[in-house]
Every structure is written in C-alpha cells, then in structure tokens.
Length: 225
Image 1 (tube, one colour):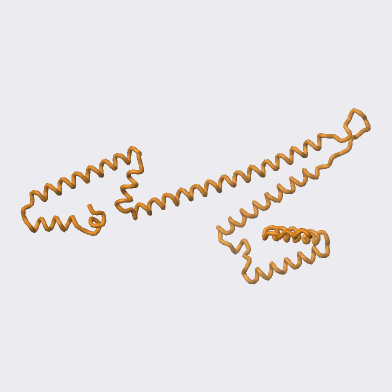
Image 2 (cartoon, rainbow, N blue to C red):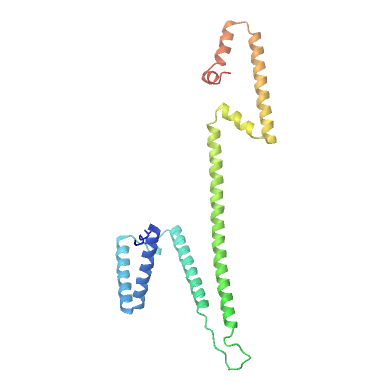
C-alpha cells in the first residue's frame, strides 16, 4: 500500500510559496532584460498609487509621520549594512601560501580566524540588539499590566459592597490596614453605643419615630443588621 501523502499545514504552504516567490524574483534579477521590465512595471505601479493618493511623499506627511517613516528607513538601512558585513565575512578570501616551504601550512589560518571573529562579533551585536528590544517590549508590557491592575482595583473599590469592603480589609494584614480596621470597629462601637443611649433618653414618640426612620432602609434590611 502506498504511503499516504502528508497534508501540509497553512504555514508550510505559505512558506513554500514565499520561497518559490524568492527564487522567481532572484531569476528575474539575474536576467538584465526581465529585471529592467520589472523595475519599469514597479515604477508605473508606484506612479498610479501616488496619483490615487494611496502613497504620500515625505513632504506631504505630518511631522509625526515623517519621524515614524525615517525611523523605519534607519532600521532597514542598518539591517542591510549588517547583512552586507556578514556576507563579506562569509565570503572572506583565503589566500594560498606565498612559497612552497614545508614549514608553512598548506592553507594559512589567520584569514579564516579573522573571518570567524568578525562573523561572531556581528552575530553577537545582532543578538544583543534583539535582546535589548525584547527587554524594552517586556518592560512596556509589564507597565501596561501594572496600570490595568491599578485601574481594576479602583473600579472594584468604587463598586464594593459592605461585605466586599470587610473582606478586603480582613485579607490585608499590613500594619496600616490593621489600624484602619481598628478605627472602623471603634467608630462602629461608638456610634452603636451613642444611638442606644439617645434612644433610651428619648421619651417623645415623634423623636422615637424619627430615630427608627433614620436607622431603617434597603441596605439595613438587606444585610439584616
């Protein structure tokens, strides 16, 4: 039985398509006639897009857009220079020995070692730049998470019920929070004792009704206090 052909994933198909497109573009660049035709075609497409307003020149952009575009240009130029440097080290020429003296090695090692060092330095710089960018992005993301957490806490505090406020106070065992709990308990006991004293001293029925009305309501009924 013939082996079933493995089904390619979407990413694999796209990668295969990209590689085929790169090869096609490279063949066109190697052919002077086709390369000239491609450049002319791209030039005409650019003119049409510019006439339709799909592409803005740098002079037509705002100051902020100009800064963003120039930043992209600088990054692309730097990447291109790094690629050229790396390619030059890979293609570094290895010269044969100047004489047939048996004391000299068949292939000198100095050029090979120098090329390897240059490759290593460039690759290390590229890695450091990548790590630096990733650290900066991580720092930004952490700051955003911190800001969202603070915002969420503020929203929760605005919508906290008496039960949730009590639970929040009891969860925090810090010294400042303990003092807050003491103050709230003391306030509650003082108000409770003062209300009891005022009710006991009141003999007028109208005043008793007013006390009862003040101490009654939806929240008191809900929490049955």
